[in-house]
Length: 552
Image (cartoon, rainbow, N blue to C red; front, side, top):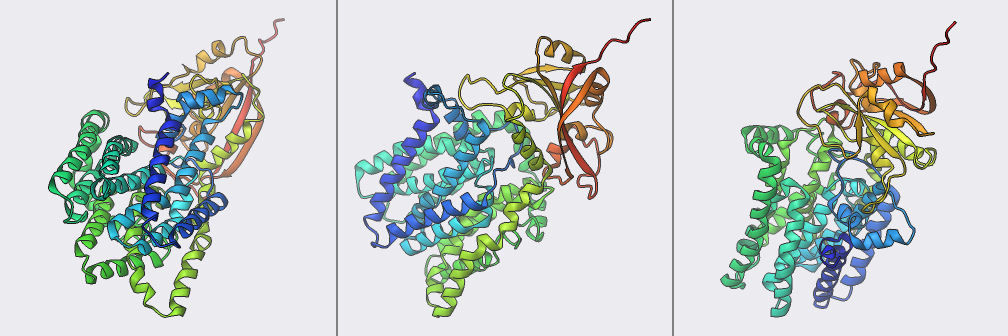
């Protein structure tokens, strides 16, 4: 049990929170008196905007399978296990959303520290925290299941920790920061495969941006601490689990897609005014000019290079929807914000009317762009998620639920299995999931399924002895049909083998977010990803065995 606490999510979060708090106190002691209350107000504003605007949304890749790493570590840790033992059950999806929400609300704090260390201007650092608090794209994803929210928090904290390990006047605190940095970077690198792109930025921080007063010996020690988790991630994670993607990502295709995306005013989300306020790219340009003319050309090149490197790296994906690209472009948030915040000295030299106009415009931007956050509710995958969560109270505890996940080798995430799952190691699900698969369509992309997996002919045995047996006919049943109005063969056979009595249904117009989730991974079963008039129907059935025909 004692060793288990080393990987406990709540324990790790508590350590990170303690370190962040102490580092903030150390920095704020050297700052003007107005900084602390302003920073506290910024975090309160961030929390208010995210609590009122952001929607609980499943927007990550491999929905219904992946779990935000910190939420997963919390769920399987002994601290949470003890809390659950006190009689409180928490759905896993709720834990995922709440974990990301807390991280999103607190991210202005490590970003403030990072900005203050890099730009050496506490006013600019406060401006950076404020810009993140009101940034519509960060608000929109802050209550979702995407990994980028965790990545933004811990990567910003990692940069602040690195600066502290290099520049703090206290030897003991530098040593503490250096000890904390290694495990923290391991957390950052493991959060997402592309997070290894932070490694060259960390080295550039050590040898370029930190300042000439840092001794070389200290730099090389920090470089070693940074390199060890990066190499381990490369060897144990990236090459092992993502070898083919690494090869593809390093090809010319990524460069050409980045060039296309640069001029695509929909997928270049920094220039997409439905996603990013027009004032942000203007402030970015003004901030770069301010840095360049203010004698900080190295910082200007560093931030612009960061932005370009991450823009190109994430162009490996050329998504179907701008909302999907906005998810990937969350990694552009930090360089974008830092460049925009750097414009503050020039903005402060403007007249009172101009300064007030800019401030009011930025404050109003979350409301002006509220449509982007609300738009996630229109996607088919989100409509299905809402329908399924509403079913929680209607499906009896312990009921057997048959859930179609696609043909063998091309399976997607089991919907109701995730919806009914409680957080916590060894916690039983609200119901018993039986995963229905169809005939094999290919061999790529299938994920191992932890629950009972059957074909249609095996359903009868799976439900035998259970008074409550249900069948969910969801989006996957339609995705693997021969047309949008057809059902997958396994789903159609359920109607042939059993008497299915409808319990609940939901109808809506199809609006695809991620074609990979809608069509599976073995090529599209249907060719129209976004039919404007096709109505999707979700149904929950009660399964009854067909009565044997009467004999004369």
